[in-house]
Image (cartoon, rainbow, N blue to C red; front, side, top):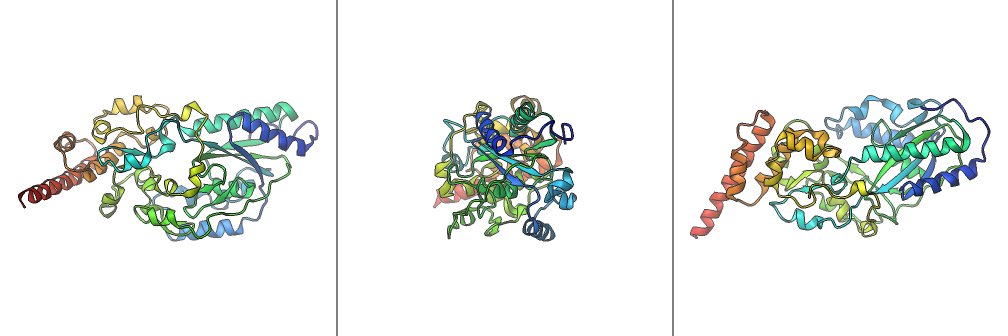
Amino acid sequence: MQGNTSPQKLPDYAALAQAIKAWGKALGFHDTRIADAGADTTVIESGLFAWLERGFNGEMDYMGKHGTKRTRPAELEPGTLRIISVCMNYQPPAVKNSWDVIGNGKQAFISRYALGRDYHKVMRNRLQQLADKISAEIGAFRYRVFSDSAPVMEVAWAQKAGLGWRGKHTLLLTRQAGSMFFLGEMYVDLPLPVDEETSAYCGSCTRCIDICPTQAIIGPYQVDARRCISYLTIELKDSIPEALRPLIGNRIYGCDDCQLICPWNKFARITAENDFHVRNGLDDASLVELFGWTAAMFETKLAGSAIRRIGHSQWLRNIAIGLGNAPYADEIVQALQARSDDPSAIVREHVHWALQQQDRKRKLSMENTHE
C-alpha cells in the first residue's frame, strides 16, 4: 500500500464516505460504493477454485497463482479494511452500430471497450486522484489502486459494494447503466461505512447464454474461457482451435454479443470521457485494411490502446481468421497471399487456413453459378 500508516486525526468516516462518492462523480465515475474487505468470501472462493479445477481458465495461469490473495484483500495488502469500488462508462458517441459491423463479413468488429485509450491507465489515474483528495482531507492513509491490474475479484467486490449484480454472462449489471463500463478499486485501511448489496434482476432471461457464438457460457454464471472469443483473440497466444475459428466470424478483438443482446444495456450510457472516443476509425474498419498494417503502423496507430498489448502477430492471426470467414473476394485472397510467408509461424498457419476457406467459397460460388 502507498501512504503512511494512519491518518493524523480520526475523521468523521460517514461524512468522508459521502465526500468520496461526490469526488468520485466529479472525477468521472458514474458510481462509487464501499465494501467490507473482511466480508465472508467462502462462496466466492469455492466458485473460483471449482472454475480453476475444471480448467476453464485455459492458459490464464495467473488466475490460480495467488491463491486466496485474490479473494482476501488483507492477504494481498495487509491492513486493508474497505474496498472503494468504482465504475466508468465507456460507450463512445457516434459509434457504428455493432450489429451492422458484425453482420458485414468484410468489416472488422472490435469490442467497443477497446476503441479508445487503454482504460487501465485512465482508471488508475482517476483513482489516484481520488486517493489524493482523501489524503488532502484527512492526512496520510494506506491505500492501493487497481483496475484489472492485480489479483482482485473486481466483479465480486463491486457486487458486494452494491454497484450492481452479476449477470448470467458473469459481467456486472446495473439497472441504470447496463454493463458497458469499466471497474476499478481502491483498497484502503479506513473503517468507512459500507454499502448494501443490490438485488439481481436477470430473472428467467437467458439471452446472453443463447447468443454466445461459441457457447462459452455453459450455464448461468459459468463461462468456459477456453471457448470465449475474448479469451481466444486476446489472452490465447497460440493457435486458435480450428473448430472454433468459423464461429469467431469477424470479431478480431473481443466479443460483445452477450452485452449487445442484454435488455439492460438499453440503459447503457454514452461516456463523458474523451479518452474512450473512437480512434483510427476502428469502429468500422475493413479487415483487408487492418491486415495491411505493418508492425510499425500497428505500434503507431495503437499507441495508448489496450489492443497494442496483444502484439502485431496476434493481431494478424485474428484478422486472418476474419478474412477466412469473410465472403469470397479477390482482394481478400490477395491480402492473404501477401502474408503467406510471414515471419511468424502462427500467422502463416492461420493465413493458410484462411486461404483454404476462401478457396472453398470460390469453388462453391462457381458451382452455384453453373447450376
